Image (cartoon, rainbow, N blue to C red):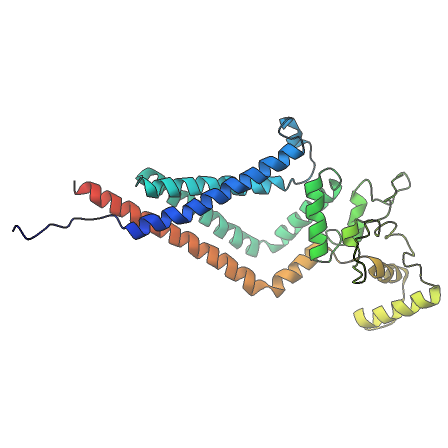
Length: 300
């Protein structure tokens, strides 16, 4: 009997410190996101005037950093401290919180697949609402410019959506120099230009915008129609569309996003599946660690 030792249940050090190490990184990333968000709000004077949060008519991208950073901070803190101190309450909170996020992601994915048209309508409404507030917030402006440049689009369903903005609409009462124009991010890019021409969208939706002689414009329209329509029937609306294509993108961001999603469906699906598997893996590890801790305490 003296040479034998009873070996009771133990807490797995591998699981414990894996959860701890992973969540330390997650925790610090959350702090970084929160810091960036608060810094951006401080630069815009929001922190000194909290009521200005509701003044913006569109979407403030800073909310992304604050919400994502807040969630990452809470998860990282619960997982990190829960694993290090073997605190079953924090570990269970970590598992439940991660499970809720997974459930919400799964629900959102199913609803997006079932209600495609409704999602498209909401996306259209969201983009147009932010077009109205384009000049109200520099972060929103940069987000819209990045989106239009990346997907080579203009407006939600076309360049004329910029009529919703008080600076770009074509009404006679609009005294802005940007009247009947579009932001520079709508302009087609010239590879020979090293410096961005921020005034390239001025008068872009007025006809004619190309400055080409009528004979060359007609020839260009005919060529575009043969490529796009399969015939050479000219109309004033088509002339305007093709003429605009020389200067700006005429496709909307909603159809361009749909096209991008279809072209990259495998990559997008792989990313979402990878995130889901990581979440399930995290929940399983946390629950395994909770079981080990409770087993050890039960043996005392």
